[in-house]
Length: 414
Image (cartoon, rainbow, N blue to C red; front, side, top):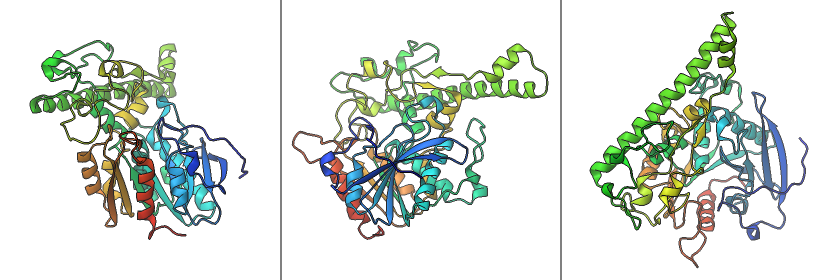
């Protein structure tokens, strides 16, 4: 496969590398991959030469070509592989079962390139993707998933799916679906009306415990709120399944020859729908719930009336297929918590103390669920992307790199 020089693209906001930490003898190449189902994905290989081990970084929704852990992992003595999925930047197309095939294309390339040891480094949403890949790679080919939650056939049984040797998770949330379910505003009463409101569940009402300087929600409200979030996911799941059912029924009728113009249109039409108000995790506004060093506000900002209502955020626009595979906390299979009991590889987990996305109770549950007997957890002072909490403090990104290198010291092939 030809190599060529390139200028990397930026990654997640706040997750880019410090160029000063890149080694002077770094060699960087870009590679185009083809998956077993014929899709294309792009990967970036960083190396100094002679490495036997490679550490992989990937996020299902972003291109992390300049991820802050690249120089940290190079310093450990590994090559670093950073890959995009076929759906990078496009939530409409993101089905995690297909993204697992993208991971497979990368690991197959790395095995063919001669690397003897593969470590998967799942950061944030990359944790759920890599956990799902590891689960499937640990299975016999005949036991792997054959369809997405929406029923699309997927060729995991045909993929080589090299088993990872080591697993590292940095600020991994339980999964995109569980993350969104915890962030959904359950006071939405009509999915087609972003202004619909059940006042008794509105998280930003003073009567329910909200205050601009910091909310205090009663335990009864929290319990009712969480139940209502789950119920909202169930409603959207039903809506998504009905969209899929209508299209599949139209396709079946068309194949059977019972087709008119409306049926043909229904068979071909790709439904797209909005999910309003997706930034309402009570823990972002009430810092007494699972307390940490975090500040008031979410990943998206400090004004909930803006971040909950504007166009940014998780899972805002979906197809029924992407919703069921990625954003549903009830049907998505791409979650660290769900897959952890199948992961027996040596595992290292890092939690940032001021993370507004991943919380201690979740991390403790995830860590306890890993089947690995060789597993460790480190707590590092920093935000979700490892930025310092206060001016003048050491970089949490560099502290995380140091912790990973310490854990890899006796485990990495050199």
